[in-house]
Image 1 (tube, rainbow, N blue to C red):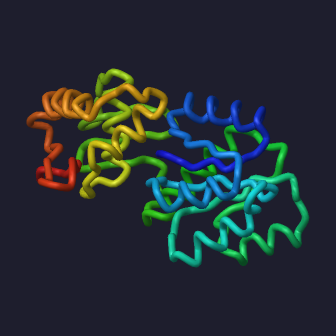
Image 2 (image 1 turned 45 degrees about the horizontal axis):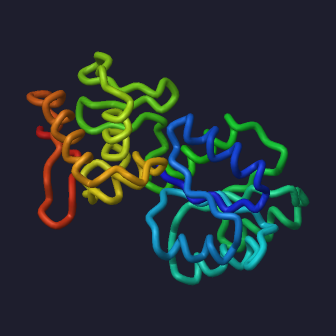
Length: 222
């Protein structure tokens, strides 16, 4: 999962970015509403975590522009404005969830996973493609019911693909989600990890296919 975090509190933004990335969620962090609006138009994300009190453009304006463009990205409001009127206003304006500060990291992480599952029409906490299953609670892949031994990078690439099985991801999209903390990684690195994963999945009933001009997709071979 790759999210956009729009939060102007430097300490909170730094801590939250590190904590979520430690939990396997890639974070693009901006501290200004104008930067958030620009990032939402230029980059690919799975969810938005949005503070209302942003400089440049406030959170309500960012959310309004997002919905005016008919972008259906799941949006979670994270704010200290914890009044009933504020919650109702935000939800009516197109927010999908609302979490007041202070909050527990585990709750934010669980809400993000739930938002993304609902957006994809899947309420089940496990992601699957044929006999390949990723349990987000245990953070582990299983193949035909047996744990699948993967390196951290291999698991990260496979998690990207299983989140939208059947849909292609370009090399750049995979780079953005897996290697966001390392600007020196080249697209060829994705080819290496895909090659390794193909070997591990060989004959399993799940495969990674190359769709010319589009990228890689995970699909069931059955």
